[in-house]
Length: 286
Length: 348
Image (cartoon, rainbow over all chains, first blue to last red; front, side, top):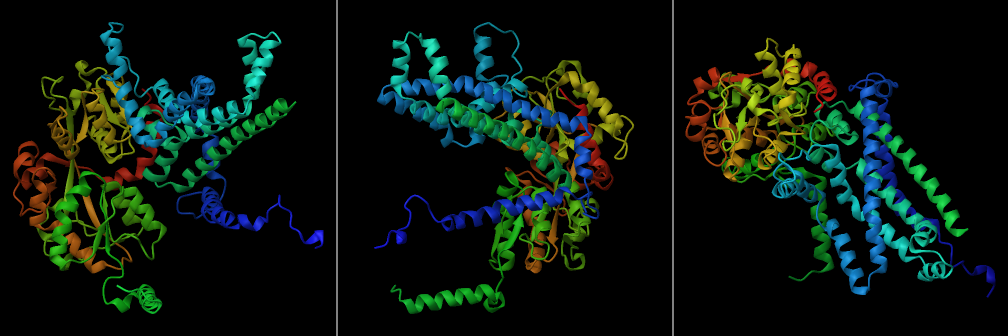
């Protein structure tokens, strides 16, 4: 048989992806195009087209403030999640077989309950008569209950817990790919624990850190339910702003423009992460 | 039963034909879809209104599809020629929007047996109001020893840091602001005094909830002791054992008409009319007035009883004198600007 008739076993026909591509086209690209078209309407009736809605948003300090505080909220949540999630992933890596199972179960457990339920649990924890205030009051550390619910730090705490699995799972994957001999080699060569972590473990886990940060960030800034239940009515973030314009005011063009601007802002952040990811891959392979 | 290829094909073809030409089946093209509100409304309608409708129509097929007013409007707007909903239920603000956007069929008033018995405020030719929602003051009787009597009590120094309000996304929040404006010399078209009043209330505010439902959570958590509140929502909380009480302030409780509409181009107009007739009928309204629903009736043939007579109004004449109805056509004109102003100015 001639060798030319044999098909390559490592490349696949792109046609196999056609159903997925079609699905994306119909359910993702089309609505996005409609959204984009809607955002260029100058008024809700669609009598004129133009950049009115974008000018309205970008020339308005209040709207820009909402965008800024949403993006900043994502940074805070991501940082806190990384800080709390990394030790968990590290512990998972070091734990014996049964310990790994337990840690994995604990990480995955929150994913099995709805975000609404988890968020309501935080309402109970952070409330005036909640667990934190009751404990601090019982210990005599505070006289009057602290205000935790409807505050910025409350939102950050709750979001960090709610999104934690998105950070820990990529970290576990990244850490488990690191050859354990590398740490031994490092200590044989005279590096202490701290130096080994800094020079070996941390750089090698960078792809996991970046993947985790990306997921957490995207989830945190768009978390409509947690933001509004813990943040209340006076802390306005982008998802609530879009909802308010689209639903309460029926101002779809402006809501569409806000959505597109939000999408663009998130894409910028995501591409920064992606560039970092590419750099880190070069770093770890070097 | 034996499944042969032949009778499977037959069944499939018949079903297909029935679907393609609904006229063939001689019955409804699809069940009547009534978009009620979620939560207690859905429960009340499932338990009382749906059975009454079935009885009146000889078990016509219908489904409840509970959703918010704004979602109803969005869904009908998206498919104006073949709407997925036959009957809509609306708060006053969204009702005017739906009518303005031409989504609503005028109610066949001359055919209706009950329309003329409704109190005048409920007689809307675009869609009558079978129910009221009433907003007054809600407080926690364990911490508030002297029951409040006026909206002005919210500003009392003893409630510093204990007051909850909602933002203007909700009908409740907007109605409350209009009432504040009226108390301080403003009106539906002059909201300025209300913003000044809220500014003065700021030290007292413990929370600005994103929606009225959150106020319930805040009472349960002891986060707030007093707030404007919806009579029906409070009854549900009370039934669950949360320490809350409702009072109608002496300025008058704010009443919102909940109107019910036949959707334009609905394929089930006749059934839609029958459902609305059932909702207006004294039998249904009398049952819905009882525990645990406590929905304020609009049909004058229903005598006020129970908790409603005690807390709100003992007859329909008292509704007219004690309830405050607001001009939502005027409110809608400026509501967008108010929401924007509230976003900007009210930061706790």
